[in-house]
Length: 630
Image (tube, rainbow, N blue to C red; front, side, top):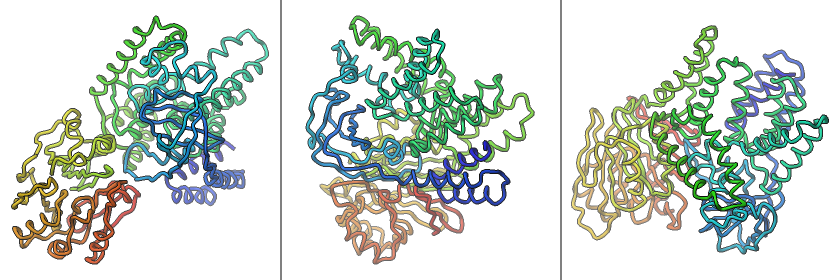
């Protein structure tokens, strides 16, 4: 039975990320593995597939606020959640009623690394979005409404901070992400257990705990951390076998919220519990460090080793802050101390984030290497210290590129092009995207284990090209920022500046134009150059040819003329574009590209587009894990 559950766990977890591999693995277990309950194994997988395709969304006209974040609130009615973008969240409180006049469907754009918006929405059953202007608010009542308003404390600063600690809003902000993994719910259960410690009938304690958790869940739309805490609590009370308990924990989490298996609230506790099944108590601390490193690299593509080491201390401080929050709900006298302590915590956390930073991504090669090392060091008394060493030094090393590559990073409606030599011997960034896409840019750079950027080229001053330059200067070591055109050469990597008459009143026509030769192929990066600028360019360089074209001005009809395409004779078109009101990329431009036999890749559809240069051929990989040979 237990082996069957473990096989189910492997197949279900894989099914979320790669259904094909999951199905093949399931067939392998059925054909080559000898275990009982094969029919139950098939039934569980079928039921999970059915659950995955159950649509709980329905259009709603009104609902109550169940979550407040930095720039949005979540409104729920029945099982449907709606994300409402608001200008000032301090005007809203939990249990306020919102009437929704217009609902909008989400549009998703994929990224190779980092936060997956689709998975997050699916895990929380967030079905629609709405704008603040399309809503009408009626002030709510009740205990949670009082809590979210700061209780009897009228300080606006306390109100904001108490929301973060009590309701774990802003899950991507500062240290709250690090320590908010359902700790408040676990602390509440511990408190109830202490209250019933002298009661002989333990069933009373269980009923009270579940009643309190359900009451909280109904008012907070059952956040994933609460669901997980409740499941773990129930199985702990009724099942003694640790392996069976873990299997049931996983299966219950999977069936209640299938896409919750992609979220930190589920993944980190499940992995910690799983690893503890096979680890002696002596190695428990090192084991936890390995799991924390693995998870935070997988989700954030960077972490501070010092933060990981300080994790137990942060948990203690978090409990102290919770206690001070509860006291602060009734009296304002601790406000100054409370705010000071929280600010100190944030400052310490931000400071430690700049020390002992590990960057990279979890690759299949690393996972296989780690499994082999773990297996062959099984009898070594220092096994987990070896594994920790591999985690800290292996992840950044195995995240380095092995070949020359050019990546059009998905920064929405903007441009950012990353050029890398093998092992990051040379890193060049052309444009930085808009400040609204800062996280997407930083995540990709971190995933590539980049600590130093040799040159940043800003083609022109538009915000969607230069918006993150100042932030990059803070986070990375930068040798050179190119604002006026010049050739850039690092070893075998040479970017040639195409200098021509650019006298114009348009900022777009002042774009710096560069070409890059890799082996037998040439890249041409067009910035936002217009048709008139293209005409001047080919007049100045009558023999200019290219194989891969970064299309000018995000596919706007003001660029990429017939004469220009006919002149350069390229075969691949890369377009940096996101959701916009400009009509980019233009249907006329797409038609012209098709007429000249271009293969077209845009970041809105394909996500991050990476071109890997090999000596004989090129490989194009997008965020949808599709491969193209060129």
